[in-house]
Image (tube, rainbow, N blue to C red):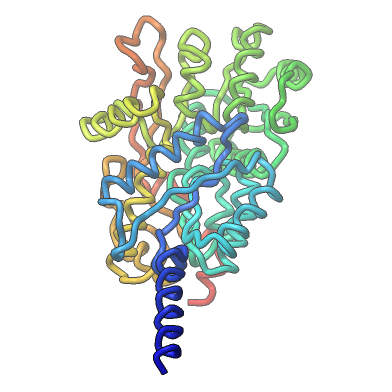
Amino acid sequence: MEAMYLVRRSLGGLIGLVLLAAPATAENGPVKLGVLSDMSSLYADNGGQGSVVAAQMAVDDFGGKVLGRDVQVVSADHQNKADAGATISRRWLDSESVEVILDVPNSAVALAVQGITREKKKVFLATGAATSRLTGDECSGTGIHWTYDTYALSQGTTKAIAKLGSKTWFFLSADYSLGAQLEADSRKVIESTGARVVGAVKHPINTPDFSSFLLQAQSSKAEVIALANAGGDFINAVKQASEFGITKEQKLAGLIVFIADIHSLGLQSAQGLLLSSAFYWDLNDKTRAWSKRFIEKTQKVPTMIHAGTYGAVIHYLKAVQAAGTLDGPIVAAKMREMPVNDFMTENGKIREDGRLVRDMYLFRVKSPQESKYKFDYYQLLATMPGEEAFRPMEEGGCPLLKKQ
């Protein structure tokens, strides 16, 4: 009997040691937030590591915990490939206990992630993607399109330029989901103003040489060349258009422009450009206070993606806490119920189709002489109320609305 007791005691001790050494389970481990971004290519300055920093700032400001569990930010590079982004997303959700995916600056990748998170009933906060299809035919009950979209960006910029009297346009568009949707949304606005599109050409993503595309735009004699591309593609197109002397005769319209692009171009090349944005670091005291913290951490000016990522994480964590669960559909519904309030957004509302409706802004890029201090790049021309900036919900074709 004594020998049997000793054996049992030894086994009990071993089991206790094993339990102590065992890794945390999904139920008691950290709540993981996955920042899926372009970490190494043409959109890296607009999202990238800056989005990771912004997400971590939000987690820290929230207190680092939710529902009594630590909150952990993980990240990966989707390399601007839909299949790579899909593979990472499935791995995160299936085997690495990631609860929410964020950022995703690349519309093709974002559409793939939206499909996967819809299937897995996990939350997708599209803070970096642009395509308005995310709240249209590809909408999701667990997907929220946070920062901006192709419709809102095209509304502000094209209407503003049309008011200046421009009547003819030529499109230079990236040959994937972003370019296609941005051009489609912009064409509608242009036609509604009585102007017309006289030509268009598509270019591959991450194009180093725009000469042949720009020559087509130049020969069209269009008053405005609309750049339906972003990041490195936008920067290269603007630089080369200036080198070819195209900007002396024709206007350039950037349909999706980030302050990191302007910083890279320099005010000498970018001055006078009209653009729409969801955020500017120097807009008011609140934006300046948050941006100062971000700049101290990164030595870079924050983009609207970085600001949007911070706001989305804060709102998600508030919704989790209020709902008392990490269940994707429940949390997404709670996020829709709650107004959005942070340094970037005042009384924002998330619609049933997943669109966060908030103010957008029209800016003009300052000249070098007008800029008085570091990152002093924009002059505010107009504030566009969210109800005017974003597409009416009933016009998007979101299948969720038909089920109500």
